[in-house]
Amino acid sequence: MKKLSKLGASKIKNVILTDDTVTVDLEDGRTISVPIGWYPRLANGTPQERAHWEISGAGYGIHWRDLDEDLGVEGLLLGKKSSESLASLERWLEKRKGSN
Image (cartoon, rainbow, N blue to C red; front, side, top):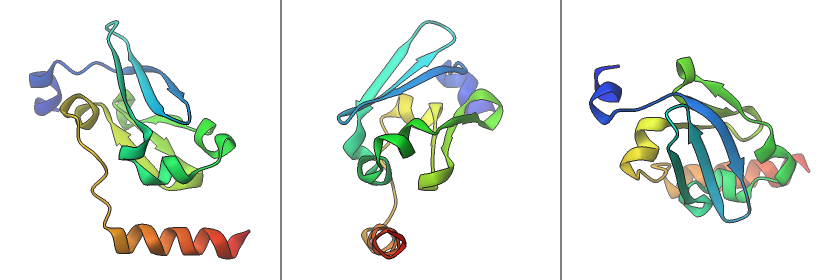
């Protein structure tokens, strides 16, 4: 957790998702908003899937079980986008089509 303390990261208090943004409220009063398009699995998820999140990683992460997606406070503070390869995303999208 040394990196988190260097960034002054705080634990997650709340998460709000819209069709355009992921907004995370931190316990220290800061709010981080990033484009949902940075995370293709979230962008391709239904509103119901996006609403089904849980705080993970001792309070420093967010997990979407239905979308197999995880975000962390550190990455959000650093402005990191998804690092998932296009091939992996395409396989995931194809699998979703087959399950509908």
